[in-house]
Image (cartoon, rainbow, N blue to C red):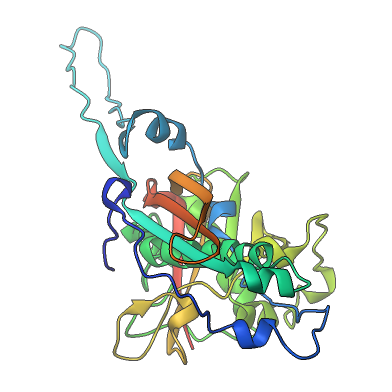
Length: 325
């Protein structure tokens, strides 16, 4: 994945068009006061990750060193023996804000005057939603394969090694008869890692939700949520998992690298990810929108920037299933 220049050297440059291509659309002979609805992919990464270190980054710079507590050895004791003392060696993880996404739009004063819509408001509303989708796609592509080695593959399970989570060469073929068993297997893998039950999540594609709704659990399945699933993709709970549905999980073609879900086209395999809130962290250092006057024409320009970082910080709290299709 290409590295995007950090905030300190992240220029927003480009020419300003004095005759925007949308002028023929927004100054028609008969102007309609109604705009077609536009639908956006549900974003989920922010709902399943944590922001535990965002404050430290905002206050101190563009990176923070995260220290994982070491595991202390427990030894057998016999009266009169010489005790052995260990020096704990904690593991550190570096979270860096090194990703950026931006948008820039302009509206000519003449177009704004002749339109009966708030064009700038409409454009920036659309851009903010598109920015969320772009960031969500970026974050999933960077983290979906970060689960612990014992939590992936054909012999997943740190204790039992009894669960097939699929591989690139042999993805799991899911259907309505085995979808629930695979979800239960993902829960068991987390159980073997002693992951807390509260705060678990599972992100599926719409295809898996379709299979799930045809499974034995269908009659007992309901959302039970007061928040619409159209924005964050949440649709209910199954076996201690808060269940989310997203089109932005990574996919891959037969012989090609994994790509973001929105750009994959017809995929031969895709990821299903489960975990706990402790598994992944997200931090945004800059997230701003600013208006300026167009220096080369009569009109306004609005640009928005988000500079962020994302990291798997507790791999044992995450499970990835490679599914066929």
